[in-house]
Image (cartoon, rainbow, N blue to C red; front, side, top):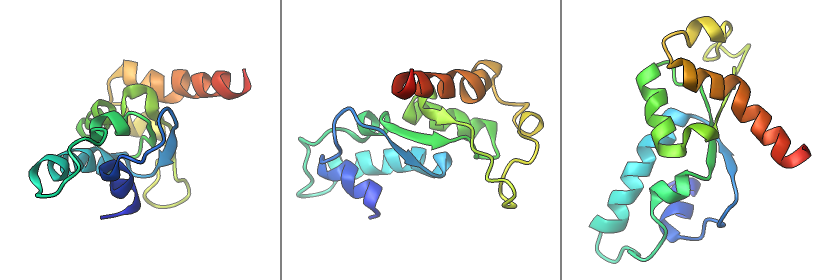
Length: 126
């Protein structure tokens, strides 16, 4: 179990806070795995906050390389918590993000590139 999973399953994740996470595709899947661990394991703390509720406080980048996986990340984290991250010049990055994300729903793309960063700036520096 990694650090993020431990925070989720222990119920110690700070309420109302957000922290960044790399790899939105992986964390969305971990949300489901963590939920199963909380309810399907002997001795699990079934009174802790549910992973889906916790993961709604985790901001992630948009680098999934698959529109369906990005939709899964939006469902797990909330579309308001997905931000543009290019990783350029790293080879896994998005050197031409608008072309590479052309198959992503236009409303989600707008949130990722425009609305979410603006909301974050307004919230902390507005």
